Image (cartoon, rainbow, N blue to C red; front, top):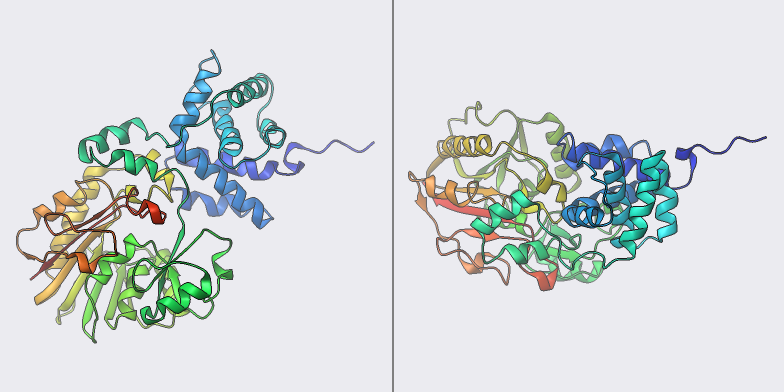
Length: 419
């Protein structure tokens, strides 16, 4: 007699088990999802199963407070935050309520992740939730995040939360901005700025026309703003600090700057080298800690710092950032150290741009106010994509609630000075 299949041999169960491991890595260990995903997903043979596992984990993280409220409202039993039954229920509900998978398929692939009483409990809670009103139209922010952002952005916090409701579209930066209209038509996308094309989210990046020839790279529209502020390079020298994985590096090189790209992560610099080679650009790559590196005797015409930060501005595409603890004070100290180091690498008359993909004012506005030794250069509306405006101080600040009618934008901060 043939043995019954093991749980992980049932169709679809390995993908759900992978999603469970991803959620555990983020919520229990505090790992970034993009670091946890490769080793977990590598064990799954089918590409569509890998994509499904990642999508389940992302949607569970995007709607986590609301999923927990539904779970708690459907049972009298107290489920601890780290209870496996709660985590499995989060994944099951994300599939049914957000990904639209049939309930019977969710049950068949989710319950094998549990045994005994927890399996019966999860089945009952799942069925009870599906008989209820479901999720709200807008995700609820985690309590700690909501408290911070109500204080920082009282007039924007609702729009920011609304911007998290759906995964974002795909933004491409073009190697040749003069071909923007051509590539928008060829790819069936829309352009919100010169050198930019936005696509509805699709399949494999490598399969999109223009990838192999290096016509573009993936880069959120907000992330493309800081480098664009420097304008044409005309052969001048620029230092890109904390450069990997290289989106801003490629922008600068394509705009005619002689780029020195510095980062202390050898692994991330390898990815930068691959990206730069694919688009056919030339960059001087330096593996070093920016806080220890000595600039050359010939100072730079400009320095761009895309500083390490909490990355909360990327929450619409990386919802895990809302659920991970960071050393905020340590990050802000590092950012100030980088600003000091960068100012010493610029020649007189040169420009410094500081940028972070963070919605925390301590990493953006407070750092810009701290800079006193350089002359502030106000950012103007004509330097920004249509629909975005500089702040009163002449800084750039975006959040996920902006450009909602076009699919939104990441949260970013940038400021510019002249020495």
